Amino acid sequence: MAKRPQPPTARDSRAEGDASHREAIPPVEISPERFEAVVHSISDGVLTESIRASIGRRWADAAMRVTTLFLDLDHTLFDPASIPREVMEPFFAELRLAHARIGGVSRESLESSIPELMRSPITLVARRYGWPEELRRACLQASAGVVLPARLPLFPDVVDLIHLSQRKILVTTGVRSVQAQKIDALGLRAWLEAVYVDDALAVPRRGKKALFRAILDERCLAPEEVVVVGDSLESEVAAGAELGMRTVHVARWGCTPQCPATYCVPDLRGLAAVL
Ligand SMILES: [Mg+2]
Image (cartoon, rainbow, N blue to C red):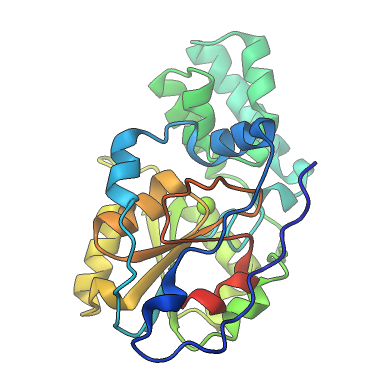
């Protein structure tokens, strides 16, 4: 098992305009087996060369002050695996009924995929297990009926994020009713400036890149003053970099020296040092 990485230390000597503190924090060393698991959990293994190229730009010369953070929710501020399993059982029962109607994969395969729905996005699980589109959509619709507990826990290091001076805007992908319950149960509205949901059931899907662009326009923000913070290289890190924003990969379960984000931190305690 990989040793738990220590957060980076704040750099006391950085001066305004001094770019020396902008280099990436050394990524976390993990075993090849663990990396394989991490990549599949965060990006379904689809870290293509084009994504790498698009998000490989570094911002060593970025001089503009960071005023705003675009924050991801699941696996960044909140661990979906902390939702009690019994809360999800009615959803799983409905999924089994949908599967009996739609088919497309074996019953055994469906049962194997169900525990993964506790910790990975539905679309990722659907892709990994080769579900037909009708089953993926039925699963998303079934999940909309989930009733979450009134209170859910944040990752403990979110407290370090709350204390930062930048404006905090949540941009989360998922089924709208479920994400709204999470936001309430986590008490996020007390310290967030705004919340945007990239609706997983919308047709056509909007996606984080289009949503990021709309938020920049709506709030008259320059890409250079925004930092995107999240766990997904394929989603928010790629989208943010394509729009010219700096990105912070929150690699709670490890990463590699090739991490394409501007910065890679093991948890949110490392965030202050890179802003
Ligand atoms: Mg996430």
